[in-house]
Image (cartoon, rainbow, N blue to C red; front, side, top):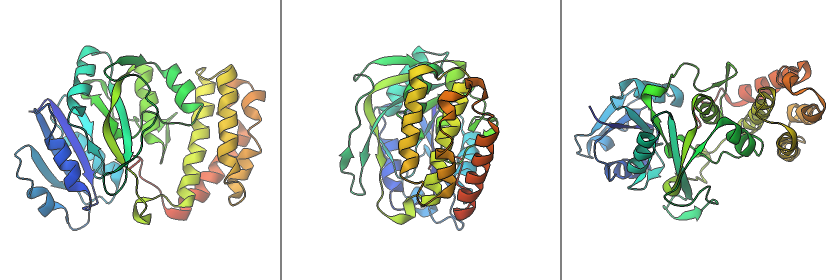
Length: 320
């Protein structure tokens, strides 16, 4: 039984070897590396077997569904701590060591995360976001902070699950990726962060210790209807956090302004976005506790989600 399970839900062969090597080269070596192959014919098996590392285990899940693949890997994991790694992202050598130390220092917390840079198809760094905290620092962030700084600004500064580590003993997978009992298709990772921060603060660790790969190829991108559906989920989160008392005053006004800017760029080509844009006044005019259950919002939301998800099919609940 390893201390840390690195879980790699995989469907693309192009970058998988780089992800695997980055998992192998961690400075903390007591890890198991589980690869879940979701391709129909198990096309990734030979590539994984060439690694030649006893810590690497291959599973052919054939789900063709990222969420199901990730959940099955979670069930197979033996480590107390779990580190997801997307098949096209990479970890810096100290990623596991640093996140593990953070969770051990704060055993009440279920989640720790670090920063990440963006790389292109050639592993060249193309974006370095502003640092949340300084290298080597650790800060506890509660749900109110996430609401005001992430939800109000529609900015997921935690990033993708490749940047996080979870303490399995403090995580209940049931409903972990839902928000107010609603399944999210694009911001499920954000819902997870909020849900875990409700139980105990999450640990932010300074430093850029992973790399998110940005693709130009359409196969890796999101179709426009999916982008629109993701935008709509931001409003769900804004209204829900306001109704829960986590977003008030200036933060709620900020959320409204950011949503207006997001919607404005899409309303002309998506009538469902236009309907939601026309009702944003509710955010600062209606009592906060009524915002999520507002009949007009719920009607517009249902229409938008149906239109966008039916256009391309339901997206995976994990933001792969």
